[in-house]
Length: 488
Image (cartoon, rainbow, N blue to C red; front, top):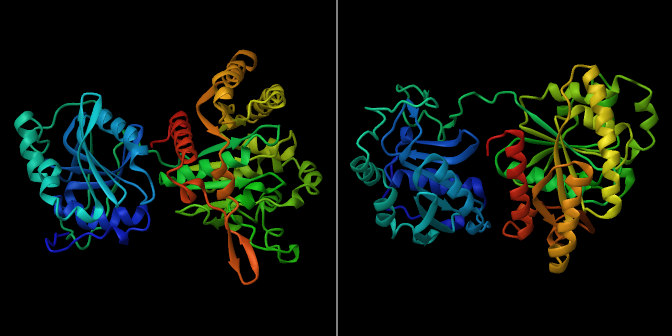
């Protein structure tokens, strides 16, 4: 793609993260900086992280990855409403892990360039999106291909991997499109995976469970799912709670009167009851509570009266597990919202999951319920072993719905956290989800259709992406992904 020097970038044209990537990074910035199609890659997975873009000053197809990237630029694109300050720490981790010198961080409205020195990064340049054309020479001086190649080659003579690649046990070559293809024939982006082993068909299923209600279970499911989706993970939510709070919170209940209920004949009950019909793609619905949209298998209040039907058929215990296996190539992560009980639906969820995450507000009754949770998991694992399943991996407890009162946090909260590993032998995740008004407000959004106000909930990342709540769920998502071995 050639660069038109007369073209001026307009940040108002970028309404979401995808448009920041396509209109600013791909169509404008990379060509302006001299990176042709064979010099940059998009959605690059390397070790345990995933980058939006890597642009190489001295490498070209076929790509050779080594343990040093001095002549490389990491480019991270964010939603126009996101605060770039919230992503500086992650960019620093990316630069230090790859030994990259420069990183560019942008939301379209603002462009920043950071330089790494040892373990720290400093801001070298920043401007508003509408100023980028006037500051292009300054940007080129830092991360333009020709300047970056010259400056880094003078520092490290062996940096040109095309001529003198270093030996490294983690090196891997990734062939690109045939050299006979023209630029116009190639895709605009080049998704690749630089990991040593391809992570194919490696869907992770996480049950979110506590047998005490009101601890933030549904809140955890929907916003954690949104956080994963913002990281380009393919996400499926399964609602197995007859209260259907997750189904409501993801905006699937669009009817105002039960006579217009279009979920009663197509929900999780039908997935569980039929061997030959009602597979997940037949039942799952697209939810736009987050952008990009997400798939949800809805629940329904009918699950209460149908519990006996489920219990009387032994085959239902493995039905969800079997049907999830049929979509293992379609999703990266499945989150199962469970009922706050020890019933058959909770049992099926934990049999079907790979991992368990326990949300809790750490109040006395919730803590007392942890003994029941541990015994329930023990019972589930006994059954799993009998059918040659691996045991359920308990990720730990995540503190949710926690008061923001400073005295509570300094004294009572710390004491309650300490009790969990000491008394119940459970790991406590570092991320904490506090009780914040925006978490309630974002799921209470509505839209007017005629005389009706139809529920139109939004994830915290779409309702208020620069909020503390969004940052807390971002940290939780990163911690969970790290624990289950999924690249970020």
